[in-house]
Image 1 (cartoon, rainbow, N blue to C red):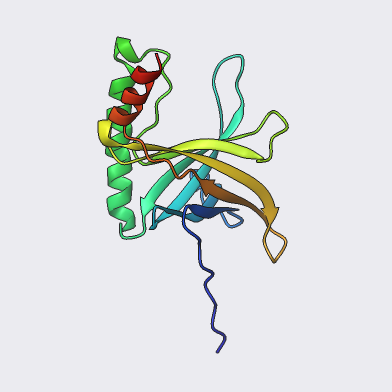
Image 2: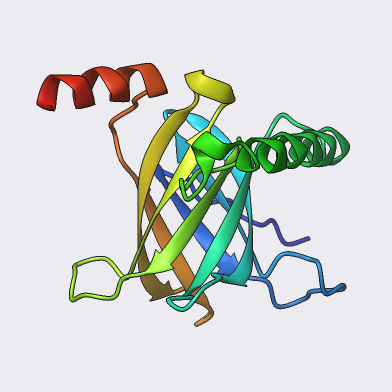
Length: 170
C-alpha cells in the first residue's frame, strides 16, 4: 500500500492550487492551505471580475480554520456575508473597500514587481480583525500543475492599531 507524504507548510506561507475537478459551477476554482501565525487555514478561491469601467480579474478567497467543520464554516460565511451587505448600504461606507470576515482577495500584479500576485486577507471579526498582506508567486508543482505560492506579511494590525498608526502619521 502506497503512503502519501504530506509536505510541511512553513510559517506564514501557503499554496493555492487550480481545482481541476469542479463538480458544480459554484464550486471553488482554487483550493489550498495557508499558515498564518502558526494556525493552518483551508483556502477556497473563485475567479471574479470587478465592477465598473476599471474592472479587473481577481481571486476571491475564503479562509476556514482547519478545526472548523464544513457546515460550521458555510453557516459562518453566509452570516458574515449578510452583515457585510448591510454594512455596505450604510452611507459612511459608500465607496469604501472592505473585506468580509475571514475572506481576502488576490490580484495579478500590473507593474513589474518581484511577486506575480498581491492581496489582503481579513482574519477575524469586526473591529478586532487583522488585515494581512499576501504576495503570490506563479509556479508549478512537481507534477507540472500551476500553483500560486503565497507569503503572508508578518505584521499583525488590528483596526485600532492601524488607526493609531495612521493618526501618528497625519
